[in-house]
Image (tube, rainbow, N blue to C red; front, side, top):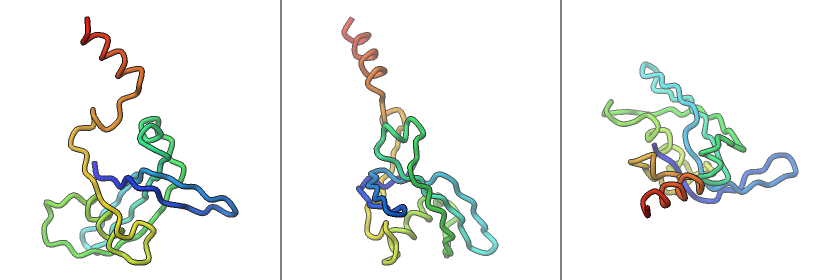
Length: 119
């Protein structure tokens, strides 16, 4: 999974939200017309992601040129966002989670595993 983990401020009407985790929530790739429809899901933190509580969904259409079909479309979409000077994600760092079991471990699960290891 690719994600951006930096605080970004969103404005919804008169409210401002600062959210710290952003990932692709939905993606549709049109290889013929080189278009990606993507929905970026933004969460307060990893715990909110684990609990599936996205606070802001940002729909975007991204045109792209691809030379290698082995590249993950999620990465292509995020790269386009961080390269666009008009994007709120401009120059943010894209990270990759190689093992989802370490991305977020709820305290109760972590504590139970710790207890079983100590015994």
